Image (cartoon, rainbow, N blue to C red; front, side):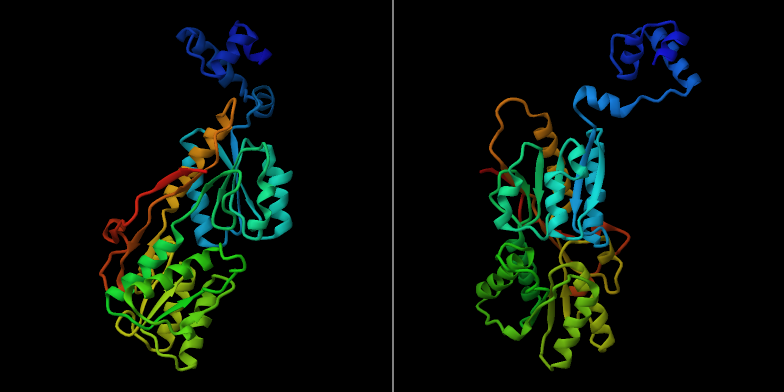
Length: 357
């Protein structure tokens, strides 16, 4: 900055005002400083600026695995949302490991950011006290509820119920659910909540559930989807639809059905969950639940920015659940064009809601 000030014949304060885009700098002076910056190749020391301001201009995002499409697309949505606030994003992959998740919120690299968006996998309701920190955190997902931080989550029960009701509406009665028993220890996981929605849809339609149609999938992957459907077929269990608890499981189910010579949707209808981009391009294109991933990202970033900017007395923690929609595609008998996302949205049964706790 001394070199820039000397070349432009201005004070160091004027150089600082230009760099920080202060309005009260004459255009001629601003241009002279900018010319000196360009000539010298000067770049501001962001670390030093952060030490002075107490801000880094960067937020953290901790997710279990970027290899999972949902979290990769969530990270993309968070980066886009943060950019509207002029913020960068550092992404940490925890691999769903308990110690790494604890490290993230107690003293990891992401504590060097201004705040954290945290999607735990190994931590659960018993770990709620670990979130009691003066560091700004917004919780994502379904592992911990009623904690001390803001929380952005999904309508897991009602959206799952709507997915199964869609299958019932098209005449399916023997509806298998895959991924249902994965990680349901405390009853608050995505799997547990979506299984509740599955049961509610059957109860609402006055239908009995065949427990043999409830299939586990500890890892919500394409491979797990293939194996679950193969088991159903090999055991000779009759089914005319599959509700996959995420799209990766659903894509695996489509593969297994094709291998067995079963037509989709004529013989077996399939619906997934998450509306990852790949579901539009499968053959047939896969119906799914759009649980509001983009809205979750925007709401979470906005709430985190509010907490970072918060001064004085802290407001009570808030819980936000964006709306969801059923996306009807070829796998449940509705024509769609993969290249035109506007073709596939069917209806929006729920608006987002926000409550303080």
